Length: 78
Image 1 (cartoon, helix red, strand yellow):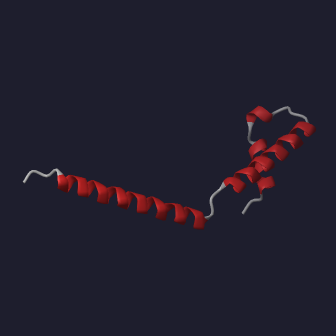
Image 2 (spheres, rainbow, N blue to C red):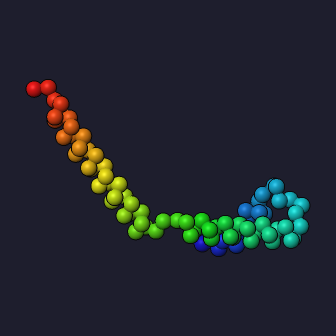
Image 3 (spheres, rainbow, N blue to C red):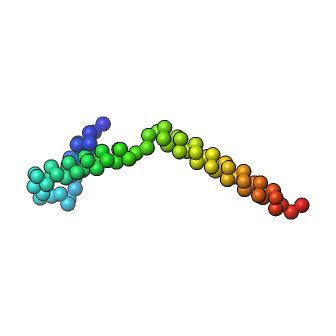
């Protein structure tokens, strides 16, 4: 598994827009890439959070289905 730094180095070595940049600019770009990756990781949901969100959504959907069924029964032609 690659580190964030290795991923950043690969990204910038394969990016045609980075041809001709100075070593200083390259270092700044790598640091920004790493900072952005770390920021994204902090914003991610954990597996437990995703499961809890899914459970809450399922409960709301079930409640909606039940209320819709009740309403449908009330207005059925007899």
